[in-house]
Length: 147
Image 1 (cartoon, one colour):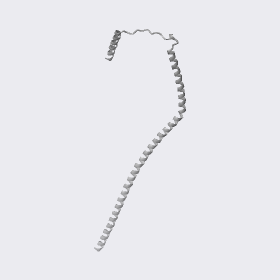
Image 2: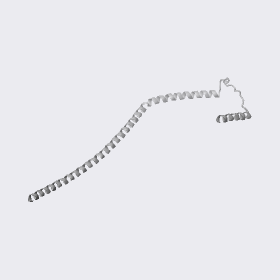
Image 3: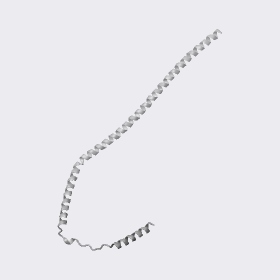
Image 4: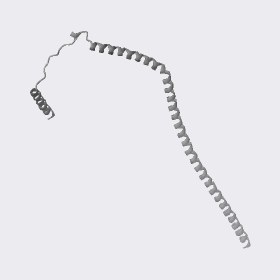
């Protein structure tokens, strides 16, 4: 019995040691799970921030392209100033030429040199009765077409 008691005490002692080890292991496991959870949350936050930075980068690239297009447009506009000034000079000459033409035609209209250029057109205005008849005829035609 004494031997069994010793063996029993050893088993109880071993059980207590294993139980304590199990508790420590469970605590360690809980701590590891907590660390994994924290790391996962940190990773998710990092991914969100990374995606946000990618989106910011995309917006900045678009803005850079727009600014580059605007700069190119401004450069093209400054180069074309000489062409515009030449075109303006040409249009001024055309305007002066047209003004001279208008002045000459106005003077000719005031003092016609060729009086035989115009001729009297012959014709007569229809009477009121004829206009009323024609109007009625046209209204009848319109009614027939719409039916």
